[in-house]
Length: 576
Image (cartoon, rainbow, N blue to C red; front, side, top):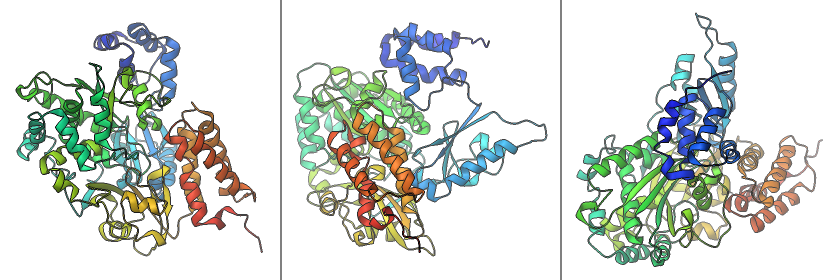
């Protein structure tokens, strides 16, 4: 029986004990970092130290895909199989990686101990086909030998960051902007200084007047959310940054976190001042290890310069931020599931109401915004409401980030004013289709979005115009497909994603996503029943009307849109 030296873990737990259960995820990450997985002895120690029932410890470990209860290889490789990576050959990469492992025979007859896992979107769509090697990004097509494989295959190429404007991405091409001094020289934290000189209510009024709405997909008015939390009289309030970007095809928040972390922190601090919060949490997707490390460094630097901590910039305002790293659960992008995760629980969504501004994290009034939303806050205060509203359209003001991937010449992150056409984004900015191919469709909004056909190329990318065409904006995902792509296979992959990611808390989603996947599996094998189309429509309607959260409510939207565009693909084929 293997014996573990628990002293290093015991020592690290001393920092977590005062926080109790809310420190469970950091404690589990610490244990896995030490031992490669979470052995039984470590689970018992964590349970005793944090006063959490052992059954709950195991419930949390089993809920999150990045935690392991059994020994794994010294090197853990995740191969992405989302639609963008599938288009780039991820299935072949998976086979090649497995073959390299099965048949590798080095000079010393040493076979590296490796665990290979298939993964949903890794947020590296612009560099598809993507992999994670020990949590660090690698490009699958660049792997040629074991040395590259177990060391990450080198750094992935720098993402393309371009567009018609540069407001939110102005710093993303500067390799040194993660440095606080460089950020401040470029005007960084001047919006915070301005905010601290005016009443909190005035900040909220400016954010409301700007027309900023959430950029994570829900599009709720940001100023209204802040106003609701500010109105609450509870002395304890929280601000939370949602950095759990996991929608297939999305990578904008990752680039902002890695390239311009102080901008996000500045927006978060201003939000805290506006609503009267003294504590904040930064929740970052478990797969975003580089972003996690850079945010921690940025927080340390901001503290040293008194942009965070006690009496910020000589005022009476004090604010602290804790960072939480997720552990592989798409559902934790839902705001209340994210709260549960911070509190050391499985990421199950809560019933609403009450809404977070009344009862959120730890039952206290909470404002939660995603990364791109918070990046807009310093911009609004620095250029003013009128100038901000001059960007975009009347009903969709401001800049917007779009993640473009798939069958285009230049996959990347593009910043544009709301109101440009889909044609401009795909065929002009992203360079058009790959050589020799023609446009067939675009999936807008990710797995929870909808397909747009050639007739939609002139649709304007604004909330109002997309809505009038039955298309969602979502978080700004555009995955492009040429005429050679098997759209049933794409729908099958989307169905598998939702069936795998459903948390299982509510039956409509738990059962509906499984039935949807089963039907698409049959259709993908050309075993189509004449009633399958109606079954898929009924499932989507039921999930939309009765699921607890957005995962189930949108799990069938892309598939229903595909049936509208290509109904013949879902009908039994006549054999001549």
